[in-house]
Length: 245
Length: 306
Image 1 (cartoon, each protein chain N blue to C red):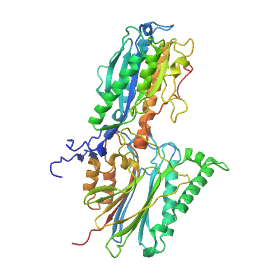
Image 2 (tube, rainbow over the protein chains, first blue to last red):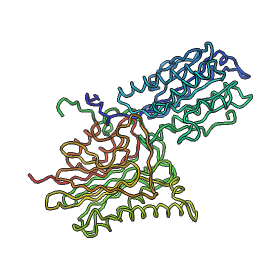
Image 3 (cartoon, chains in turn yellow, cyan):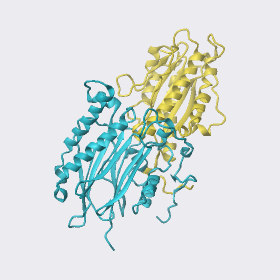
Image 4 (cartoon, chains in turn purple, blue):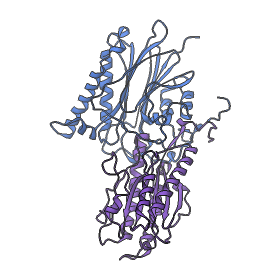
């Protein structure tokens, strides 16, 4: 099979659904809270779980793209947005330093722009991305700085602004995390935040994030396959249990 | 087409691949759950007057994989005097468990309404068809079946749509040419994004709006029936050699405005009316990420004798 030289026409574009996992790798994430596992160890099981789930279906991998970013004092790309069938080995999150949400939001905007330019070049038509943002709270940067970076990432004029779904473990509170949801309550398709119940084990709770992410990947891919470009990201947390509020 | 590599080929299993098949050939079909007696494929073809038509509706790769029924539907038929070929394609909206029935009912009602409206045969006025009555008939039929299925006494249309809703495009084409050699035709997209295109010597030309055209980021929503809508029918004339394709978005999404590889593939395959069974195979091509049900009614106007 050869690809035609003229196969770059707008009518030729394939559909693709990008997801980003963003993980707080501040030092506090490495301390086990009750269970045997630390939050970061649990976070490191998200990518393998989700990739296994995507690979279990013949066609899910055709439409889904997965990327991963970590953040501490700065933010770094852990996995450049890609077809999960190309990911080998699966990269790890490792802890370092403090907690800068601003750095994470800024890098996300930059990566999304870069990734979508690449997707367009590769002849894909992408839906707006979904970002699963996992943190144990207590950002160490200036609130005004975080707000500025968040506003830039979710600017209505930014066509690729992501659906932003924060997951809080440890000391993160609902009030703190609701600020970083996008789109917010009251908009047409609002997203939400998730905060771990008091006394739950962060490592166990994070395991659930992988399940929500995977069921959202499946629900979203189904919406695309059934509705073509009218489909898009679907947040599916039907199996959520009492570890999360 | 000089200088253009051909970007389609047969898979060893006989299906067409257009561009990249992705992993679609490895999908194993699962029977639809809780829906009996609904074929995965329906197919028709024939000739009436100066027209050849082919129609196919295929359960999509996504529904094959997940055990859901084909939600697309079509009707293609002729008026009592054979002067008009009449048809409709409909795409049941995936969220509704009974949407395949909404699609069936929309096609049946709209085709029946067109047959009545075109009873004057060659003298029928395409600008005076009662589309509002057609929409009312569709709404009432879906509403009635909802009440029966849900075993309730009354329901608002918005509630009906949660269980059964559909898009619909209805059309009619004169089977005989007018004195100037052209065929009168009318097309109305009644809800959502099903569409119609014409293929002539210059390629594909959309007759109704093409979904998502020019949008950088994918997505938009349909406004399906049952609903109060004011249809905006388009009248047009088809010339000898033209092909009219009335489609659901399962084929509309990969085809776009027809300017890409899928448009070239179908233009080549449909230069002449194909064998009817082969037509289904042409509609069912593999193409990575496009997994929806697909339905096409294609109408060929006989070329002028040479």
